Image (cartoon, rainbow, N blue to C red; front, side):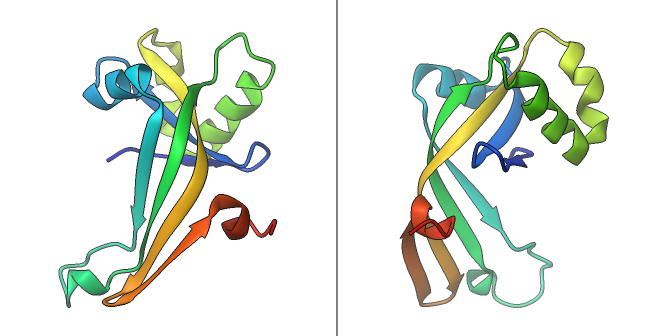
Length: 123
């Protein structure tokens, strides 16, 4: 589970995660990633009916000296203001996930696959 913010200008998803975490170590060794975003499970009803999307993506570090770092960091902080102090810590890294495709599940026996271009409305 990881917090994410939309990176609208770059059409990606921002993650700000510690290099001490195993998922960060995994991304540093292999940039292939997936992110599941789901409707909240309230404990009522069948969880198989929850809408969810799985994004297949490629992860890249947004380096602190990159031209777009400040804009990306601001977008993340706008979404998660409490994260601001962590930007002072040296072990946290800002990643951009660039989605390739998506699998949508709208509930039991309702599913579809989309390219990221289709999902972003560019097709």
